[in-house]
Image (tube, rainbow, N blue to C red; front, side):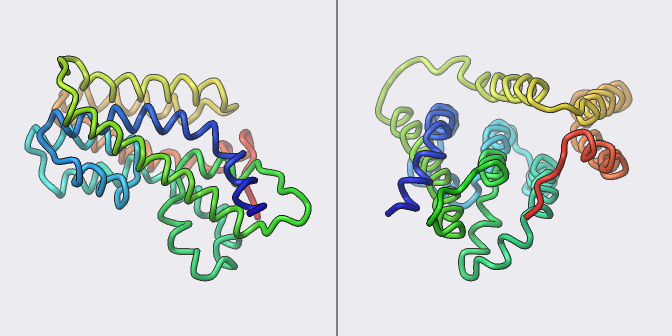
Length: 231
């Protein structure tokens, strides 16, 4: 019980973030014609907030599963680097390890790297509850949004802009919080270059791939500027 209270206190701010973003996703899915249960299942098994928002317009526009898979990999490739910093912590968590890997979002990673555990707290159990609560917040938000989309009748015109707005807020927030601007400059240059070369319909995947490649090369100066999370 101590671990649960501790985890709830650490994750409460995430609840409000996930609630409103999840509601937007649920409404988007409902507006696109997907059922309440399919929306909820996607929140349970996909759990990639930014990609889920991108996924809806891509599916409605007829994007293939291969394209979706490639996009998912590049958008969430940063989690590979998150995991490197938490390998030892997850390794000692036994049966919880697969779930901790699957549920490692930006917010969960941030909490696990900065949290100061109270004396007498089982750290592994508390970390697991932090990840689980964040996941449940996201599921609840998506479910609430799907319910609103299914049962409340209102004009949803323009709701698809929530995905664009979400990414703009994320970019601004990350720019303010991080010392190193290399990732932002890299992404901007790659996106602009491939947009000019390939056009709006084909630039996204190549620009993501190029950004990932460049950032792998520049990983050390970025880490030196930011500091890393080691367990």
